[in-house]
Length: 94
Image (cartoon, rainbow, N blue to C red; front, side, top):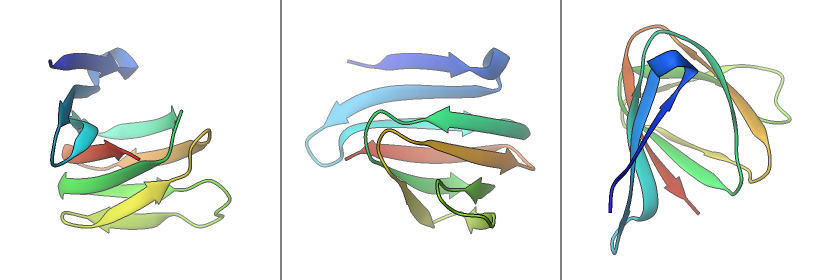
């Protein structure tokens, strides 16, 4: 079943799903802005389109991830994003 989520006054929207090949995941779009997300479990984020400037837990420098690139966020942590243009992502819960 699909699970629709909306965050930050509608600036981030995602659809959660389960599949045999991907496992539990969500795919979504972020509008321009700055966001902080908390994780309950380890996540693998793949940028589908656009780009994300990311500050991962324990890091002091931001890193830009473009379409096709991925990064992993530890469970029970918080990460920060700066989005300069509408960008899409796939989040896999590991």
